[in-house]
Amino acid sequence: MPPQILMTDPAHFEVDYVINPWMRPAAWHGDPEGNRAAARAAWDALAGALRQAGAALEVLPGAPGLPDMVFPANAATVLDGRALLSRFACPERRPEEARFRAAFRGLQARGLLEKVGELPEGVFQEGAGDCIWDAQRGHFWAGHGQRSLRAAIPEVAAFFGREAVPLELVSPRFYHLDVCFCPLPGGEVLYHPGAFSPASLGAIRDRVPAGLRIEATAEEAGLFCLNAVAIDRNLVMARASARLRAILAGRGYRVVELDLAPFILAGGAAFCMTLRLDRRSAEALRPAALATAGD
Image (cartoon, rainbow, N blue to C red):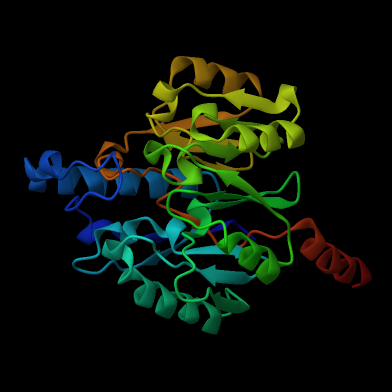
């Protein structure tokens, strides 16, 4: 089965408020029609690159007045057919919750998800943007300190029955984990050290050997190329530095760079614009493999 990836149509995307340091409403409204056309072209290019890498897409409609629905990574955390819906910290995004709740219930009704859960009221956690599955290590990396609460991390671990390693984010520029941290299929972790507290850097270094750690500078992280989608050895990302391109290519990755500038005006890029629906832990895959072997 191809990777299943959720996206949201960008028809209602715009940059109309500021909830992170990257958002530039003035730049958007300086040429709204041009930016809207560029956003559509960038979204289409991302969708095309994902399909080219072998993914099948589920596309949700957006909604007027909810421009950031185009970033469904923040809608939920998904693993083993289970989706834990987000609670948004920023009032501007809270109206998205009802829309995404209905969408995920619809996915469940179609058999694409087995269970949809909700966090307690007021326990802010912004989905895969702050909860990234590391398939090589078999645990989540869970960001907190900017949008998501540390108190949400035990809720995530209990819902999925999987370890969630806390990582404290200390800079508003890196307001979600997915803009500064990217586990790769080969076991490498691409990350920007300046985004994390000393204790969290220690947690990364304890769990990821030096030979698998790829450190990005603040300038490289600011390109939003760490906000990448990995499908096998394909890495789909915003434009990266020549240095990172060379490192990743040297490790056997096919780097697919896209111009995602309209979405970077809102502080998001490729990973933010997607949500993987079919990801399975090794433990969940074993029973299926045994069942197949017995057929």
